[in-house]
Length: 181
Image 1 (cartoon, rainbow, N blue to C red):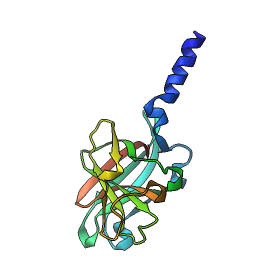
Image 2: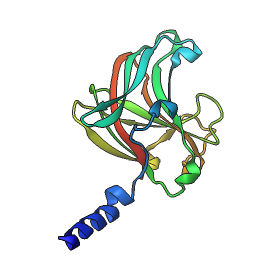
Image 3: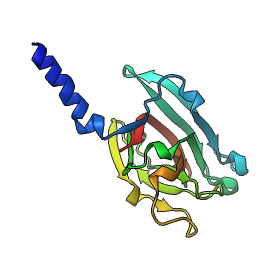
Image 4: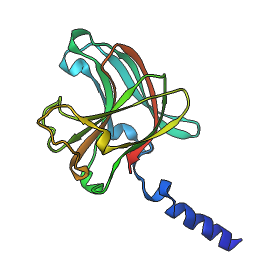
């Protein structure tokens, strides 16, 4: 019996889902101190929303919800947290587990080179009413402008945002966990 338990623990420790994922957040232990909500209202937009951190299905999750409107040159709500990319120099992409209302959502990465608010690297992902896991390689992220480098240097990542963006719609996204792989 003891050998079986040791074998189970060892296999869990070396399995790809444990050893190859650098977890950033599972939204436990005061996530509101790490994650900030903001919207296009910082630039005169009219989108409204909120971010809540709640326990669901015996786990903690972030819930981004609200109304995104492109009126008045707006069009986003998001939660974002600062990242020290030097902790993840060998990362290949972002992994996350989400469920939502069928809309497309976006990941925004900012690096030490993204100095202006409209500079970021962006990748999209879908949502459904069931939990889904995504692994999005850095090569799938598109830069927001030609002044940014074509490739993301993981060691230079300074923040990660989860964004409802770009069109008039109701946002309703649950994030169970997010990390680098």
